[in-house]
Amino acid sequence: MSTQSPNPDGTPLGTDPTEQATRDIAEVPAVEVITTAAIHLMSAAAVKCGLAEGPDAAEHLDLDEARRLINALAGLITASAPDLGSQHAAPLRDGLKSLQLAFREASVIPDPPGQGPGEKLTGSVV
Image (cartoon, rainbow, N blue to C red; front, side, top):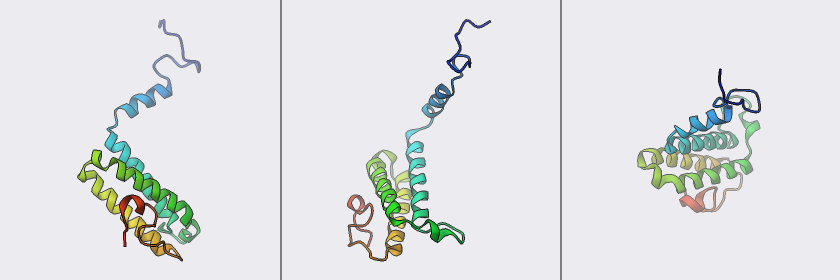
């Protein structure tokens, strides 16, 4: 018989889902967490730039949202690149540049060079 008191939800101590999630995330290297976050931002930005597949891709086009996502992605990549190393940072930079160019292509009125999403952090892509 265990002498441990149960968690408030009745589960035995040490089996709280929050504790388990904390242990799980503690085992993940920072590079992997950063890269995963960047990929999520890239995917969302791609959809908002109209790059989704399928006949309804145009319905998801939202350049205002895409701009926000690309700005966040540029900040994440720029800030973390020294810690990621070129092996991980280079593909992320390439993906970011592709999104910045796709944004320009989708824009009816293009931003001036250096003023597109993320370009204050990365420099002009044109």
